[in-house]
Length: 173
Image (cartoon, rainbow, N blue to C red; front, side):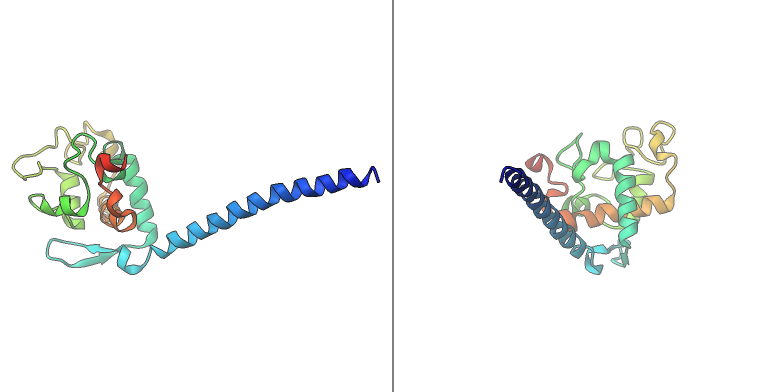
């Protein structure tokens, strides 16, 4: 009888360890399935140019764009905010109200190459990382046109996935 008690305790202990792990694993699979549902064609399709022509990115391109964005732009624009000016975020409404509008892949690429003030009146290349100022902002040196394209794609797809938290500023941080 004495040897039965330790065996029973070990079985109970194993069960108590396995059940929480199984629960966590099943919750993790549910979250992954929900996230996968977000990557449909409508989510990956964004304005390609100011004329309204659409472009559809692949999931791999958006993941690459996210990595490049985080590496090159994320210091100041984490979560789509602009840490130096919370009034100007990377949310769709703010991008569409810029002059010229920056709510398409082509216009965002143009901005990353040679940024201008929100009203479009003057260049801000001296203070904003860009290809034009890559001598000062060294992270920009290794970016090519395709890198800029997938970064722009990520900026335009992110609010479709994150909702109002993308570019929401201090409200969400």
